[in-house]
Structures are given as structure tokens and as C-alpha cells.
Image 1 (cartoon, rainbow, N blue to C red):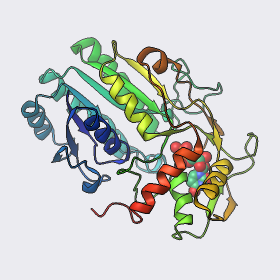
Image 2: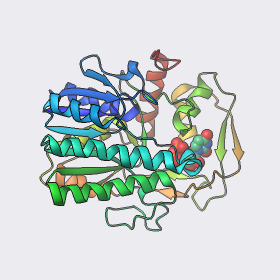
Image 3: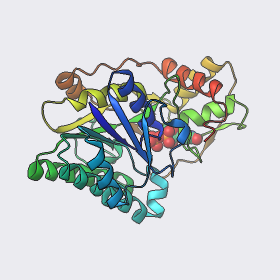
Length: 323
Ligand code: UDP
């Protein structure tokens, strides 16, 4: 298929673009490079630099490209920032996304796969979180993604465009060539490994008094190559819908640090710090629907395999992307 990957220079988009190309699809990457990196664009993809806010450009690209499908990763994704500047999140993640949708409808693109998030659920009490769980976001980031899920539903009803909204839990891991390079970095696994690289003195554990087995927060870490597999399967989904994406098992902050110590051979000093605002104690995905309906089979189900892949990528690119 001919696929437009919006946000294909970002962490998850770059690995998905690579995976699509490896599997015989033709990819054009569209990215503003505000948070993405030129060096994260697969050399086999066409690259178009631009912003989704530019409605005329988006429409023009879609007209010229004759795309059959779109993967939409282009969004801001920092929870803390969204609490300080909600307008930035609603404008980019909703309004600018609508430019993409309108251009897709005008040019008869058949389907769209959308990067959604566990943050659309907020703090649900039931675990695992299934597609039937109540969605009550607790920050503008999660709200912006939930709102776009609903907009997709309306575009499907009114214009007939097919969609799959994939709600990632904790995206992690790296492919051989593409990994995580956020500035500033806020995610647990890269921060821990920066300690092993000698770039940080220690890792701060945000709270050890949660109601979890070792007191630290539990998350469902899902490898980006497993996310990539899900995106490709979603291109041919028989109907529109929502899918939660995680491994179905949880790992605590302390378990992740211990695994990183084992993988790197570094002592990785850690210190207990106060809780981070807005962190739910446990988030674990129920992903049965995508397994049953689309035949998704995650391959990276251990913390070792995930952390090993990141460590390998960091050794190859110790300072991240050059551009
Ligand atoms: N965390 C931590 N220290 C850090 C960064 C994160 O203890 O330096 C914890 C955070 O409180 C959460 C888990 O690690 O419980 C995963 O956080 P991350 O920011 O990677 O992803 P999130 O779950 O917020 O999407």
C-alpha cells in the first residue's frame, strides 16, 4: 500500500515507517521536525517537511500522493506540558489533525490508523483495562486524544473513512536503527539507561508508597516493534474500531531498574523521590480484542528483551540522532 506516515520522524512513527517498508509498503513521511528528527526518517521513505497546521500544504500533499492509507503519529505527548499549556495540545492534536482528516476525505483515502493512548482512560479501577473500560482522561493530553478518537468515529459515520484507534500503554524498546531521543527525556527506561551511560548520576524513583507489591508504580511496557506490527495489521482491519495495546502484564519501576542493572552490568544508583503528580499506581492493558480480531502477536514480552534492545540502540547512537 501507499501510506502517508504523519509524524514518521518521531519515536514510534519512525519504527513503524521502517516496519512498513520492510514489509513491502511504500511510505512517505510527513513531519514538522518540532519534536522529530530528520535522522529518524528511514532512508527508503520519501520525506516531506511540514506542519499539519498548514491546511493548504496538507491538502496538496494528499492530492499529489494518491495515498491509500494514513498513519497519524503527529502529536504532542507530554502530560505535564499539557497541564501547563492545554491550548497547545488541543490545537495541535485536535484542530491540526482535522486538517489531515479533511484532506484524506477529499482525496478518498481509504483508511487511517491513529496513535491513541492509555491516557484516554485516566485512572480506571478495573485492571486490565479493556476497550469497554470507561474513558475519563485526567489531563489535556489524554482529552485531546479521546476527542480525536470521537472525531474519527464521526468521520467514519459521515464520510465512510475506515479507522483504527490504537491505544498504546508504555511504548518502549528500539529497533536496530530507530529509538527514543526526546529532549528533554522524561521516560523511565531511557533515563535509567542514561545513568548506565554515565550521563546521569542516579535515577529518581517517583514514590515507593503506592498500593503495589513493591510500592512503586506498575506499567505495561510494550515494544515499538510490536506496536508497528499492530499498525500494519490495522491497515487491513475488516471494520473500524478501537484496540488497546499492551502485553497484559505489569512491571514496577523497581523491576525495570533491576532488569536494567542486569542487562548493562552497571549498578545504576536509585533514590526515592516524592510521587509525580497524576501518576496512577497501575496501568495494565487488556489486548485480547486485537489478538482475536486482527491476529496480533506481540514478540517482546519480557523486560529483558525490551531493555536489551534500547541498550543496543544507545550503544550505537550514544548521543541520539545527529540531526
Ligand atoms: N518514573 C520514575 N522516575 C523517572 C521517570 C519515571 O520513577 O525518572 C516512573 C513514573 O512515575 C511512572 C513510570 O516510571 O510510574 C513510567 O513513567 P514514564 O514517564 O516512562 O511513562 P508514563 O507511565 O508516565 O506514560
